[in-house]
Image (cartoon, rainbow, N blue to C red; front, side):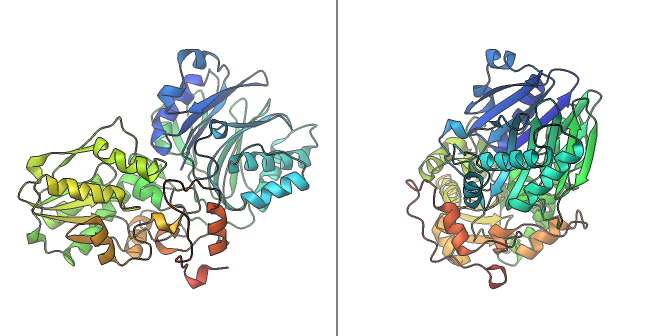
Length: 500
């Protein structure tokens, strides 16, 4: 769940990319980086930390040029603590390439061996993004032999990339002296859109990035599609994958994306309102509305769902938690110890909204259960008589391999447990989950043209069709488990239809 942006303009882009990364900060807080190009030379600055901390005035002055890339990093592969793995990544041949990537390659280890043994390319980090960059570089070299470059060559290279790599990926790259290329995986799992203004072209993970910088959304890139933008801002699109199906990640709508974004033709805000409608039906079947005094959202992604639920049930909606906006999102903090410690720093209760009441707390999702457990206890400490908890998403029972930090089953509170066992673990009086099919219908109805969604963390169906228990164990083998216990996939079971 990284955030990426690329710009080709008639004016300097350093400030524009910085502003774009601020609008994408929710997608990654571990590291940030910007690269610009001037006179076929790349200028780069990247480091660990938030955007505002990574870039100072002296760094911005050292980023000249009218085209560039940026990324905010949220690590799901490689070494989360290594500054070397901050993006963008650079390789000098052919032409000179820099790249930013959002997603997760499921065959990165096999590709590393291919690159070393067959393509004679060296990978210096554990990042799958460096692997992707070298695959793209090799495919470009094959079609151009390093002599000239035409848009048709770029599209041929992207076609070669699609044939070699597996997993989820939204990519933006700069080719020195030629322009920008952007492309999306054949299933469209990770988002990517493009917009224009009078000065140039911007490609970004979310439409809010375009809106906030004066660009008008043109459209989303299609699954498998590539876009080439030359240095004058002329755009060319081409489908580069042989087989495509449009299955965006449903967790983008549940939690990851900003509510003011539109992704693949779906308003994220409206999607969350719709989830509130279907969740209200689940609540009624579990807890009679007359036993609920007030509906309180857990900030911030759950607010639209909670408001709609409260309206449909005829219950008061109240803000009972105040969020400290200067503490990062606990979901994307590395290490369970850090995550747990930050909950009470992040949220504080308004005691009068809880005292003597039966409260229904509404959250966007329950992943590890750490935050939920702390929040339920906070409500009790504030004097709540009963605490009910509703999740706008279904139980997260399966690991995610496409770029969301849900990699091991032991981290998931719902894995291998019944709903009542999860309720006991969290400590609430009643636990209400969204239904998987209802979630897909609620969001899918907003764009019937979609083939479906990747909802693998909820239903165990991996849309790339190549994920087995062994793959999940292999993908997690390099993770730092020091804070979260040893990995054990013995209890993980995928639906039979999906095991390869």
